Picture (cartoon, rainbow, N blue to C red):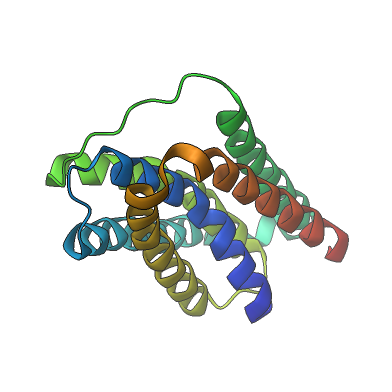
Length: 182
């Protein structure tokens, strides 16, 4: 996987976190630099950690399924992308609290990084430098989430669903790309 592909994947994975970060910015009575850094740190940290877990869990069974690993990566990425798109298109957004409490932030960070766990499983079947991949994913998610808090405070609800749809499309396209290379 090239650096450009890793960057594009990181952008796609960060869109769920971005959408939640925008919501946090919307709910905030005061959107400051500290709030953006805290949210970015939680989301970036979880997005970087979850692929590592998925990668090492899947490494144990990767050799036995190597012949069809591109199909596994395609299915996982397409499913996750489709889920992101579906979630953005359906009605009934859940309100996000204006709290930076540890329990609330861990819950949100975990919820937005489950897809990164599945991507980590995909990484076990691909020629991916896991260290470089998690650094890209973590840093990109940190920046995108911190920016999302700020943008939520400035621009409001307008772009949240569009970001989730864009992230879903990116994940589906990455899955198709991996399938075509396989």
